[in-house]
Amino acid sequence: MTTPYRTIVRDGLWDNNGVLAMLLGLCPAMAMTTSATNALGMGLATAVVMAASSMLVGMFRNQITQEVRIPVFILVIASMVTLVDLFMNAWMHELYKVLGMFIPLIVSNCLPLARLEAFAGKNSTLPSLVDGLFMGLGFTIALTLIGAVREIVGVGTLFADASLLFGPAFKFMEMRLLPADTGILMMVLPPGGFLALGLLVVGKRMLDVRAGKAIQMGGAHSAA
Amino acid sequence: MKAQRTLRHGLILGTFCLGFGIVLAISDSITVDDIAARAQEDRLNSLSQVIPASIHDNNPVTDTVTMKNDRNKEITVYRARKEGKVTGVAYEIFGSGYAGEMKLMMGVDAQGKILGVRVLAHKETPGLGDKIEVKKGDWILRFTDLSLGNPLPDKWKVKKDGGQFDQFAGATITPRGVVDAIHKGLELFSANKAKMMDIDTSKVATKEAH
Picture (tube, rainbow over the protein chains, first blue to last red):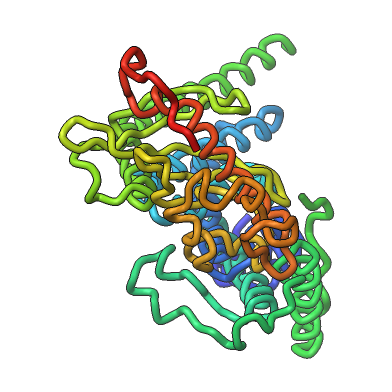
């Protein structure tokens, strides 16, 4: 089975986007999107885990038998998450202080597992790496969009505290778009997550319809 | 042979577990020192916000004693010393917020006056209850210099309950929990002063009146 890299990249970023098309990984997509900065950080950490675990599974796909594939996939994801957790704690401590308690949650995100099952288990190392990476980046884009919508409408800022998360060089990203205390607070609370996600899914489908594409229903129908 | 196949799957799974186990063990041993150093820095950082550098010449992170607080929870008391004498202590205090427990760090000087209070962890509503963070408002700074007798005990409450501390618009439970935690923390200090301050108990004749 060979899929052109162009298709893999397109699928991951837009056509088959993990959150906006497949509606997978909704737990972090709701919990971590109260601000665009948190969403971006969580998305990038997930992308690293996905790229690494997809590559490993692609590499060992001939050794992993059908019967034990699920435990092995989970083992791979859990190990990658633990590695990211350890390395971030040791060497990217500022980022870790913000994301630390959410990193273990990547294990419970079903998007990495879905990609291992649907793609990496059947493809060789390099395409698997590309698929994991771009699915993860698509996830990052979706999370950042949800986070941006919620943050702008909810508190009127965009990428607040980005310099705390990524370093002083990212101070330019911090913006205030609405005057203080004018936001609709509900958008930062849990209901706002569902509203923002719903509207973004609608928006994506409208763009797809306008582009004349058949609406792609989610490849997998289970969601976490 | 079915048994043979089962054995093979077990071996595959076992091999992967062993392999990743080794990788994780190696990574852990590489990072363990750095992680401990970061945790130490974090603690020093939060301590330096509630204990001014001018009152101590020791490292409070390493000069500690553990004790039980009023909820029977083990807490660590960090001591600030100048020329060997304890000039102040810092310890964690806990309050009940709107969404669970809030963890704060409080510094108290030898006379029982608050040197500073900072919120370490909470799950309060963003935009409403999170104004207790020093990053989001200066509310928490008004506790500095207060003590058990200042204000009087019945004023150690939020305004809504007849006390002297402002609540936030739309959030009363959070500040109520913080005020209560600080008050309880001061009581803990006055009741366990000798132990927390490392004063030789045989020489302490009377407990300070308040």
